[in-house]
Image (cartoon, rainbow, N blue to C red; front, side, top):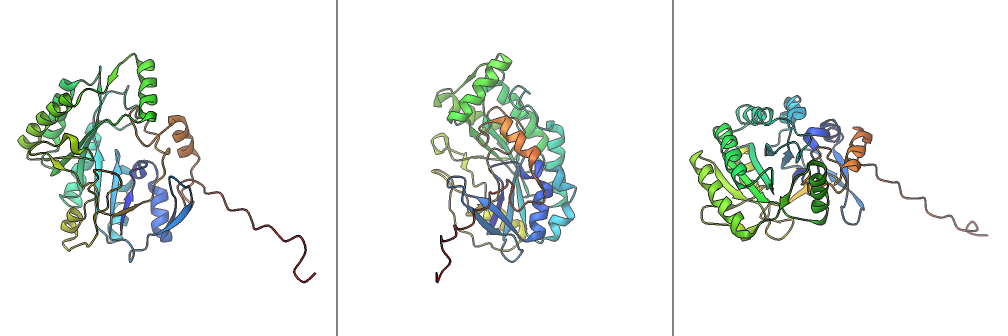
Length: 307
């Protein structure tokens, strides 16, 4: 079983102590994001094939890298670096620090461990297509010797995303757009050229309508990559989480509405204040990332049996 930590929040940046406590305990409780029913995920080495981390800041886990390596399972890191203006991402670490972490992962763990994510691509008055071309070029040059792949996607305008972007637009006097597909395809072609010039494979996450020749389908949870890191085959089936997803099967151990990075375009946060409050209130010793209410005791019969 591959453990995903996590598409729902940034566990490395904000919940690393909790994560290592759960590794030590050998299990974690996770709430189903739809039914909210809790279930247990086995984190003993015998049950875990590999980890995939999703983050903007891996430093808290890098500080305890020997502990993670001692666990004895391969891992990859889906590392988002977009270098957008603060009006769009209020609290992420500077890109130069993120780049340095990717360099460390490549040199100290395995060259295939880090995967750079440049997503979502947001079109706004601060980040037009010309911004993305220049910005992507600078980042690709800095990362070209330290990762083999960069994954992109275009902003998907869910209701909560629209609401949070509209709030940022009012607060910072900016405009954001969802341009026609032709503009997205044009930008994808330019980014493909740039990636190739820096010896990076460009992949696209969960948006097959924007695939062009040379732009491959992303497999963010990738048993093939993990097998190469392990130097042994991993028999994990492909089981995407939504239409267009080509990922291998995994169990995610995160919770939505718990990441306090404050990115205006985030899919995983409905209300930024709620996410910040939950982060501030969490306990690293809890079985679950958020407290799970205990079920009420079964109602006692009106009369004891036998009366």
